[in-house]
Length: 120
Image 1 (cartoon, one colour):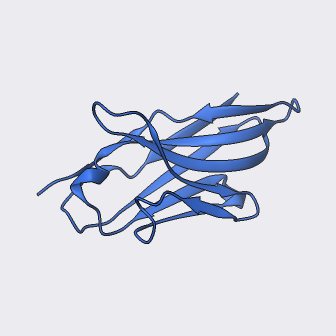
Image 2 (tube, rainbow, N blue to C red):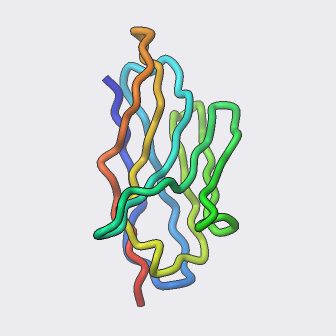
């Protein structure tokens, strides 16, 4: 089994910054990709950012230039640096990982989510 645990959410004023972390643990052989998705109240979950093991990134247009995704392969951890936050960034942010376990199978995993609220 593999677990993804997020941290770093909270309440921040518009224009502020937050850094989310997601640590993967368990029967990990290799992490293929790690990424972030978000879901605002009454809306569908949407893609935010993704990073491959080699460091290739893709970021949603809605956050491009404000959010940066990075990862520490040694720690099996992915980060989302969120700057210039706007009220419309308010959502539950969930970590996603495509992970190859020690049994050789590759599976899709989700964290429990962390709330980010941008409000004055």
